[in-house]
Length: 196
Ligand code: MG
Image (cartoon, rainbow, N blue to C red; front, side, top):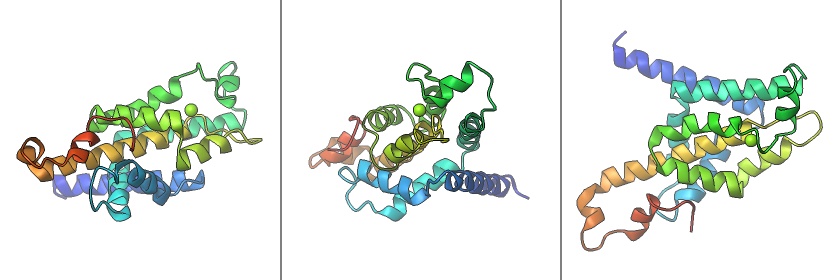
């Protein structure tokens, strides 16, 4: 098999594994895509749900993203079963705000599409819109733990939104950004933390 085809197959497998694990935890890729659209629609004219879903799937096809997701979800599930050693068990179960390793793991996803991802992630982590807030609240129900999951999906959304910002800048070219009639909202897409 050619190297490129093998890479594509590995990416499709990683994406399928991620999708299954997310679905098992109540997260649909369409929910993530909807949040990407909310983040980027003001900056990218004509952006639609299909392009946002394609971007989410592209992020999930990265092996390092898949590894981060599987690691975090496994830790959440081990905490739900009481299978982590103390004091880690109590820390993860109670989503201790000073723990911080859930955010650190998520940053390994955010990094993939550059510094725009950091600002997008900061916004999602603070405001917790849409599915991110739903997962965060769901993790406080009896017997449930989403300490890692909320940060991981916020990171996937942030990375997918950043990927769209980069791709549209590439499409327009530098002249379109710098010259007369520059689409100001596109420029904003690379410099602000959240949607208007
Ligand atoms: Mg968390």
